[in-house]
Image (tube, rainbow, N blue to C red; front, side, top):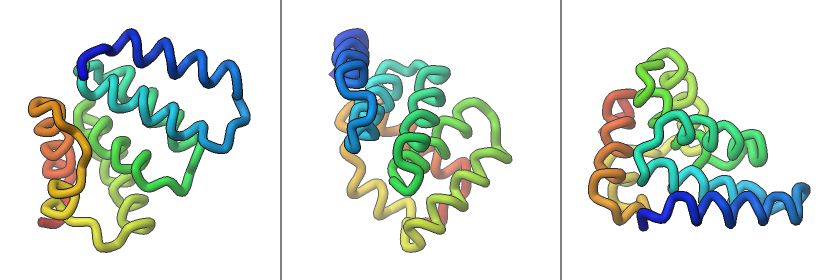
Length: 123
C-alpha cells in the first residue's frame, strides 16, 4: 500500500525473531511485494532471491524472479526462472496469472504482468 519502509522494518524484525521459521518465505514475500510496489528493482530482485532460498519449491518466488529479471534486462535468467515456474506450475498462463495476482497497485500490477509478457509466458 505504499509503506515500503514500514513493511521492510516489520519483515526484518520477524526474521530476526525467528530466523528458522518454516514460514520465512512469507516474510520474504512481504518484502517482495513492498519492493515491487515501491518500484525498487534491485531490492525486488534481492527479495525474490531470498524468497526462493527460503522456499525453493514455492512457485510464487520463481514468478517474481521472472519479473525481476526481465525488469533488470536479464532475459536469459528470466527464461530460466520462467522454466522453473512452468516446471512447478505447468498450467500457468498470462491470463490466469492476471486473474489471480493479488496486486492492487495498478502500476505494480502492470509491471508484474509486463514482466511475464516480456519473458514470453504463453497467453
